[in-house]
Image (cartoon, rainbow, N blue to C red; front, side, top):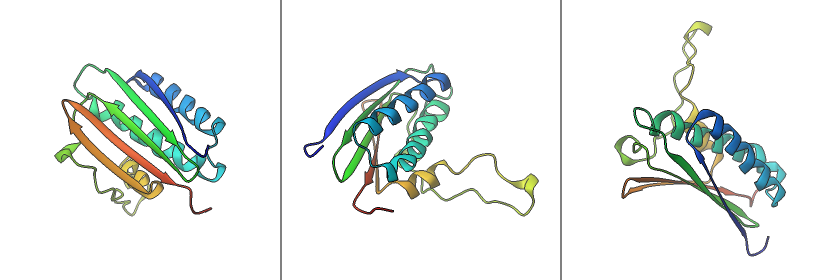
Length: 146
């Protein structure tokens, strides 16, 4: 893995295909040398990002595909997720503040933690929108052994 490994996966932007794609990506990353102490972080961030594409980027449009390109090196992993859905609001990555919890169990939010988790689990996030294509890059550093 000194020079790095790259691989791609493309799937339809549906819940079923996204779930299958996330599982395939996680398995491929593990088999190609993803450090075990980062596997759960990567899977959670990947699932949150891809599910956002399915649920939000293609909301109100005909779902197309999600393309994922992974570059795995000894000390880092970069995942580039591309789609042709709606852009992120304001054409930027959301800040990632968690949804307010409220005081009662009934007040707990159903969602609102995805971007918070993505920010917490990655070492760098970049977003670009050009020519009708969203490109979200998630980078994970392996330098620490947390």
